[in-house]
Image (cartoon, rainbow, N blue to C red):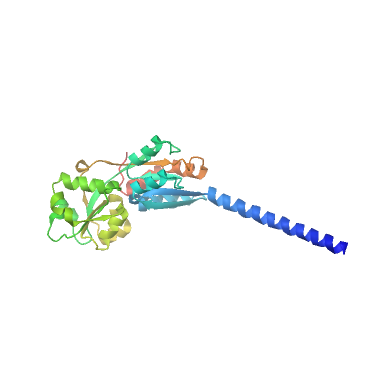
Length: 264
């Protein structure tokens, strides 16, 4: 009886040891994955450019970069309220600057580019007609990003007022939550025409629908200065710091310029 008791005790200890080894291994693997994953909160105008940058970076680095796209204003609010993003890339440099001023940044603000606005339509040649096309009777719906929290929406509104067309078209406006949704409205025909980011007009899926666009002159609106930071949450995350440095490289900047972002 004593022999069986000792055998059972030893087997129990072996099982406990095996469990502890599995638990430690699982915890270590989960921690490793967490340390090797970078969460980026990014303005929607970066959708195609940042996807290309991530593809190039992850082809040489064994790391996972997850980009969550949205309007800069809403992403700012989430990070301000402690959302767990490691990096913030904003279409308005004021948002990362505000985070830095309030002690919520883990790096200096990096000014990575200047965005541009274009007039784009799936069925009309905006390149030939220009801003006057907004007042064309055929145009029933005009898509812009919501000016309350999207920098491109504020720029679109400023440009319309600059060209004195805003009062006559105000009732035709439909608002996307961000510039990506705005482009979707126009590309699907939900809106006849839209003011979108050049970076989205240059994306392959948009160019297949319509390669023509009207580049809205920069003097008609406030400059779309764009900036990025490492957040306070990401300041001690080595993989985030490494990717942030890559965003400053010639390779990353060339991709941004390919998608229409001007040099700072």
